[in-house]
Length: 421
Image 1 (cartoon, rainbow, N blue to C red):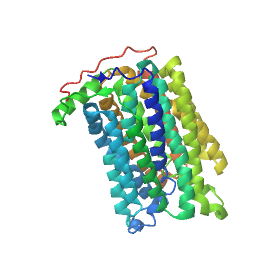
Image 2: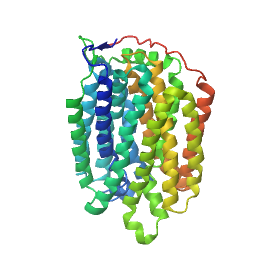
Image 3: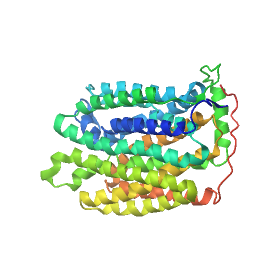
Image 4: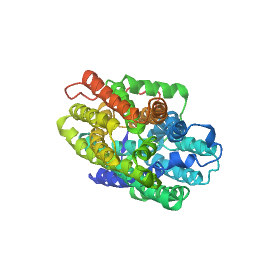
């Protein structure tokens, strides 16, 4: 059960939201900073010539979320037992160390191993969502989680652009150290600026007994509506991460040979435009979902995403790609924020860490598999086929949401979490 500190002012959740959103923005900017040049960087390392560039790009980008899909449920459970703020700090400081080490990698294998270690120790987004969801009144969840995505995608919007420019002008190593510094600042900001009202049990101790964990997770999955939301989050993770590994290669294919030396910067611009649009969509549509219904926003946003992704398979220059990425990104903001808010409506207070830990596991598994799947699609059918695949993912979200989500606002069901710690 959640125990709160009643001495805190009633608007303390807003302060927490602002601080965590800003810290998440810094962390996201740092981590996403390496994406525009990561597929190009790994090709310069020793032993990279033995694997195709498309497959190598998928592995190096997909490794962290794939490993995180296993680790984050455990971190989420520990967050409920010891506090969500501690998990946010742990994730940020661990990531800062590992990202700095990536700048010193000498082989492709070493870089992939460090990326996997990043996934094992991270879980920043899940910890932030659990912290904010636990501090926010239930009738403001859509706005709060939508605002949190502003920090996330605001950082993702800025990071790739900075990373692409730094890589083009100063080489591939410097951006990793810059990223590490941003993550340290984000961790210090949370340490100083957040006063968590959630009080874990006084006798809390590590209780990662497999049987207790399985009973707890079974209770979550048996809660009505949760499995449907998790399936939507899985498909959304696949959709959002599919373009990332092929963006530098696709931009390079669209550019005249005379401009090809700035491919990293242009790829960063594409990812930045998409992230800015997703930020705006998440905030605007997250706020609207509190008033118009999460299901309605989800279905409308998924339909729009389908419409805007199909023509991306036929673009002939970078400007067309930028416009369509922006429109699709705004729609993707609604697909991102609405299901996250639904989870908070279905669960009971005090279980946010476990629920969003599982949610992060589902999303991370999708985020890890999506780049690898997209790389295989690109290698077999061509780069343009990836955009058609993303349209199919959003179409699946539309059909599942229309069929399985209730048309009316659903009563929140209590979780039956057995064997709590």
